[in-house]
Image (cartoon, rainbow, N blue to C red; front, side, top):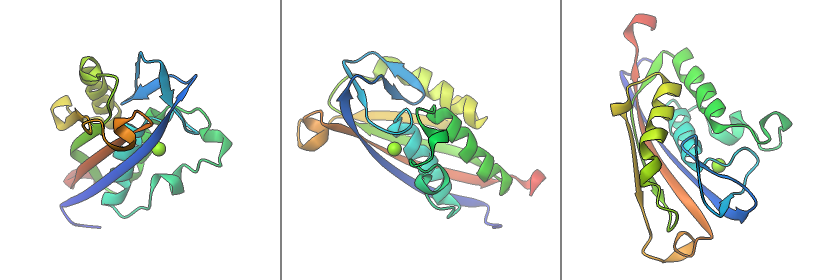
Length: 165
Ligand code: MG
């Protein structure tokens, strides 16, 4: 791959359940329910990983980190993000910027957004100003509106690194 820029899109959904911590963007958010999943179920980081892999047509997160693999049970998705970053860096690319949207009714995530941005930026070894996290509700409609689950979307732009190409 030699294109200067590559773009990728990621999307993930997880169900809210009792008895799990809520982890989004690598940050634990106080809430009465958490997300169900094989790993820590961090839908935001999963969407970012998928967008990074997609940008280089490397398949999806399920192919690289299968939920049938015991190594990934309960794993921090920051570790998955670090691995995805290693894959794209090995191909000569780095994340130029990432923009995300989380769709959920509750809880309010505003107070945690800066910490999420920091954690993602540090893991990807990029500036915090290259990491955008936005949130919206679905106005009470559908499975995000009833609180059955949440959705995360991510778009990632990769730029080829000339020095290690
Ligand atoms: Mg997921």
